[in-house]
Length: 117
Image (tube, rainbow, N blue to C red; front, side, top):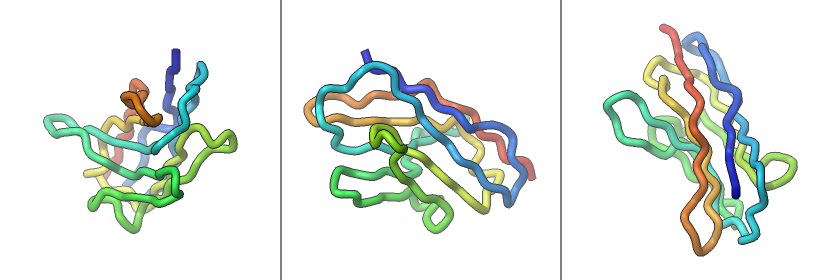
């Protein structure tokens, strides 16, 4: 059974940067369609932060465009998120997602990112 664990969250000052990584345990036998990062702030819906697909195309949420980058880790199995110019409105729980072809994606439990003003 695949499990994802996020790391790198915490308290960051406004204008600062962060790097979030995701560790996968277990083996996903299906090829990966896409992987990415999503976030959910209190009282709001979960939204896309950044994703990268099997063609290496990247996709970014409007709120972070120009401030976020996404890449794969050295194993190629999980996404790495880097963000700069953090704002208090970036405060949220950030979730790692890995979506194989033909089945529902795997989600981590999330890591809290708090940006102080």
